[in-house]
Image 1 (tube, chains in turn green, red):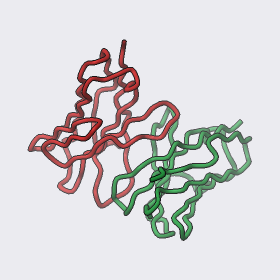
Image 2 (cartoon, rainbow over the protein chains, first blue to last red):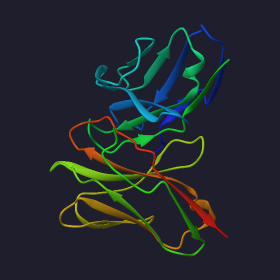
Image 3 (tube, rainbow over the protein chains, first blue to last red):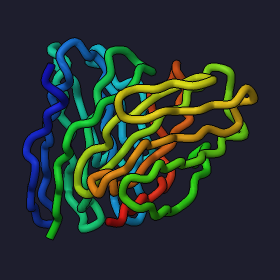
Image 4 (cartoon, chains in turn cyan, purple):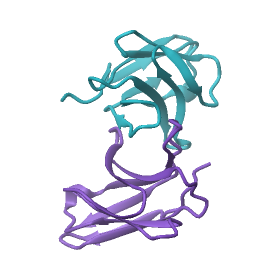
Length: 112
Length: 110
């Protein structure tokens, strides 16, 4: 069974731009969560989607948003990029909410 | 805030068994202990999960004593490729967001 896939793997943007990252969960998994990882703050939870509904949200500004489609694929969007948004963005999927989460390889975003 | 405490770093020689301890004094009845491994610039990889006593898979063993206030991840005969950061998480089976601490940076030396 294929794992979690994320596209693109690497991205370079400039301040003020916006970006959309994509995540395809493991087949049969309906819950998708997003995390941000930086050297200073470590791994932090962004939000979780289940059945196309946002179920949980971490402590991030409204510039960070996401959605989930009927096939469980998910996208996250960051608007008005700031230098501090440079990070590894990780997507994780699980069969149901609260089940073991399996992570994708991540998208490395660099904001210049 | 992470609900677990683990050593910041550990060193080991190739071929040795490595035991990484984790404290979770306030673990709730419904919580599980989950361990992930992460290599630089990659997503965390699920290693093992347990509730109590001992769990073993092809990669590692997890020991959780009866009081469940601590646990030990055991990696048999480590190799250089086991050099990574290992995260211990106290995860609520009914709640999704994982709370990661700083993990344990394991360095395997030849």
